[in-house]
Length: 147
Image (cartoon, rainbow, N blue to C red; front, side, top):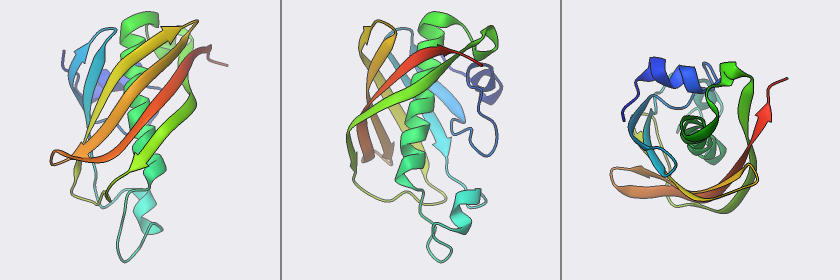
């Protein structure tokens, strides 16, 4: 199942400059998602990280992966953020950063469900550029009523 940016906005409460998913290429409900983030020079983090050699911060890559987990969880279980629910990142394990990500790169975000126990979802995640792993991690999120 593919999703364009308008579809993505229906499942994530984030907006510019913090919406980090541009497109979903594949989604298997309850199992996995593959999404894209196009990294562009005009993103605000690059004015300070770093002006002479812009590099996407690792925490932003992890956040993009976390947003992919949110879409997968919403599509698999609870509906949409407008239904009064959000998914919150509650844990990061085994995070590794293998190479830098620069403007012009396209991040491919791949997420697989490991387990779901008592509203805690655990995911195996990796981000790649040109088939090279840039980041891998296990992420956990949970459902919460929006305030």
